[in-house]
Amino acid sequence: MNLHEYQGKEILSSFGVNIQRGIVATTADEAVEAAKKLTEETGTGWHVIKAQVHAGGRGKGGGVKLAKNLKEVKDIANEIIGMNLVTPQTSKEGKKVNQVLITEDVYYPGDNEPEEYYMSVLLDRAQGKNMIMYSPEGGMDIETVAEKTPDKIFTEVIDPATGILPFQARKVAFNLGLSGQAFKEMCKFVTNLYKAYEGSDSSLFEINPVLKTSDDKIMAVDSKVTLDDSALFRHKDYENMRDIREEDATEVEARKAGLSYVNLDGNVGCMVNGAGLAMATMDLIKQAGGEPANFLDVGGTADAKRVEEAFRLILKDEKVEAILINIFGGIVRCDRVAEGVVEAYKNLGDQIKVPIIVRLQGTNADLAKEIIDNSGLNVESAVLFQEAADKVHEVLK
Image (tube, rainbow, N blue to C red; front, side, top):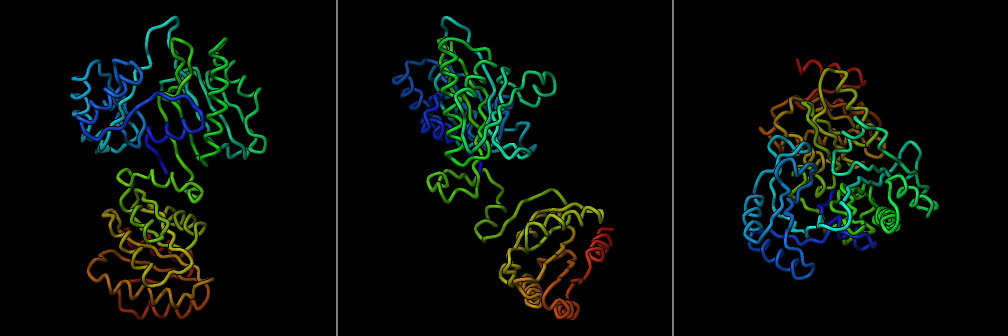
């Protein structure tokens, strides 16, 4: 589950991470009131207005702007709220901005020049351990840094059994070239950032930039946070942070129906039980010359109701030219699945305008094939994987 910047900062702050303070606003008038409140609390006269969408590169798309007075705060908020923000991480249509974050200006003058760093915490799957990735080249796309100056990217692998150790935090601060008070502040920042990552059951915490202010404070100016959906049962308060306006509408509908669904860009809809079989089915479609339009796991109880819900989800995608149903009848009997497919097909009637290939293997697979073959519907049955692939290839010609 992805979070907005202000939500990620709330989590960071709860674990003792120093953040750039801000207030969320949904209208231009609210933005002005937020700016006034920040001025009272922090003394800042300038404010940064940031679009709150689940995408990076907001500044490049015009979603992050500096306001030097309250009139500019109102004008910029009016401009950003309601716009379709297009960034390198959105579609060409962009994402609608429903709210903005009004933040304090932390690039104030002082004894030293402010400096920006990049830092993220994520899982290193190859080692089965967590990892802090960081760079002195903050404020830039980390992909660009990796391509042009790979020597400026550092990593620190952390054993989950021990957590981050003091020497590792000091190593990060040293590699960033810090000393004195800034060195101490960075050690504290890194330690608390890792605690926030671990304590919130996140799969990603990315701070770009981490700022060293002109008076040597270290703070998170931005935050990109992805929570592990499988751990949300331990964080009911985080579940309330979900913004379904930012998510694919079909995936939201599938979650409500208890189906595991991920929308893709292909032309062949998949309906499968079991994640492993779903991945194999997607490979099968590729081999047949098609592209999977979705990942859809209906689970172990592929009854008529769930099959009908799955059909409705797949058919929402206008790019779908065929549907492949691939069910292994272990817990559920294949003949019941076949009956469910026929019943769902009849209930949907004229909504189904694409050919359907059904491969059922397992308990009562022979009865299932008879039910499909005798249904009189535009449904073809298959027994072998290759046979299903051949039928997909035929209907895509």
